Image (cartoon, rainbow, N blue to C red; front, side):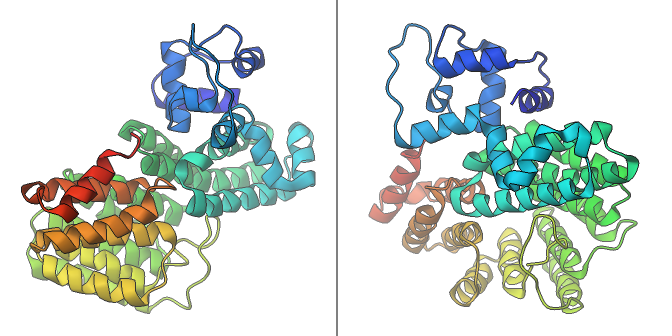
Length: 400
């Protein structure tokens, strides 16, 4: 917990530490309400108000915590224990005696824990997973200090994956951009020192995906570097990098045939891949990247290129026949809503937006929710239409 706090404090440019005694005071609601700096760091770590974690402000009456609030509070105060549970009994023992063990079996446990967290994120959303992911990253960093050179290299290899995953969680949870940048930079650093060129390129791709669409030039620089840099990406990762480059080209005003040509290159790269594998945080990069996903992302490029009707047709076709994880289905359905709005179909856009909201709201899939808010803004001229009003009210009712 203290280590995770220090990592987040550094990401926010803050100083200061916490100790076990301080955490126990917070846990028991004794005097010791975190100061302004600590509150900022803790809110960044967990993406929710401190009261939902069980903190009690001064002079307030402590309400009994039940159900979900108790889960949030336990996940904050005992996040590292959650990581240990994911590691299993032998993993817990190795964490308790980390300085004596630091071997490859422990690296395997850490990989398993990271994959388990990624699976949990897909079902429960980023805010629930962030505490344990941050603790896992802190555990890896601490173990790497005293590991033998060969094991350190393996630890930092897992650490690069964990740092990129933590950056992803922060982005989806709506953290400030500089927090996501901090963890992406850590992933790039560890990928570089371990000589993992493809992972370095993959993080550049993820940085491109995390770049605001209004900074299209930076998105294009990052995506182009990922796709064409001094490394050899696996074909599926190469395909995803090229489609991201196509989107950035569309956003920078490139001619539609240039965008289409880059998408053709993405299809060529995907055609060189073997059979898709199960997606995994620690397995081959973009192992689960499929033709359906490429087509859905291509539709987003067409939308950005000012071809919303083409985007609508592609998204409808591939959402109907493709198999997507819940987060991806929410995200692409939100883009379909936006494409319908751009195609001047406000009622269909609003109804589709409500369908996306039903998928994204409970787990808090932030990127889908962000696209829905963008659509709601585009639908403002139609705000009096009942379907549009319903969507806008539903979005406004979501907790910030």
